[in-house]
Image (cartoon, rainbow, N blue to C red):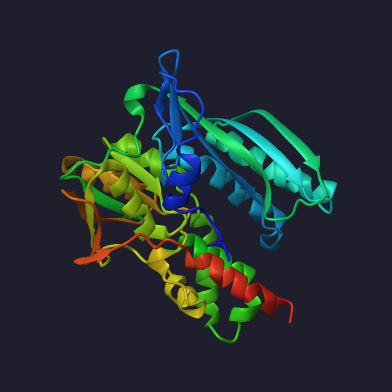
Length: 340
């Protein structure tokens, strides 16, 4: 069986990387495995772009699902340090979605876009046989800004500190506790379930990234999506050709995370955590970044350093990229139980 979730580096390097179309001088940042966005120069401006699936989970309720879908779309481009400005979106909808349900999705996305100053500039909307939730299309988010404000994903430098916001498994916790609440009731204390479900609206790194980038020079940022904190730190190190030494103890672990991950047998440090921002920051700017995040109510910690070498070391132990995210196995194992 093929692993679910994003393809691994070997697949990317064999099938994708050798075939990227024409070479153009205006490309500032070409595709790399584990890198959130690409960038080009247009008339002296830096234009960052990121493409993702439109991910709508009806089990969350359409309003909540649309909020999450929108923030997935703009989060990867936000870690460029440039504020998202434009969105191109394609909806390939399942036939059963009603006009009223779609209206809820679109009006929620519109409200979030207006709040962040994002304009929808083009798209496509249709219902098609064979289209199913949660992947109901795709979109490209765009951010336009100055070259000097662009935070490159390969920018980590030896001596930088590693800052982690919100801690591990934020997304896994929020989604699993909502989608499988009935399975958890009676097995996990009610207050832990409620705390886990409160993680839902932590699942966006957009404001974290923009606040941090405005507070001090930041050398690299990465959203800890699939494979979580471990995978994200490993990818930052690999992109820059450096090593990262990480300490778990300073990193916040939000309420509900441990209980949820234990119930679903998920390693929180290796699991999907949309909303957790990983940053490398020159040492002289760390306090400014942490103070700015704290002022916005974002828990964060100085949790490591960038060193010579390669790979990831956690609490003194060499740690490889997780490869496959345990969240997907937990979903596949537990979905049939909802139907029993």
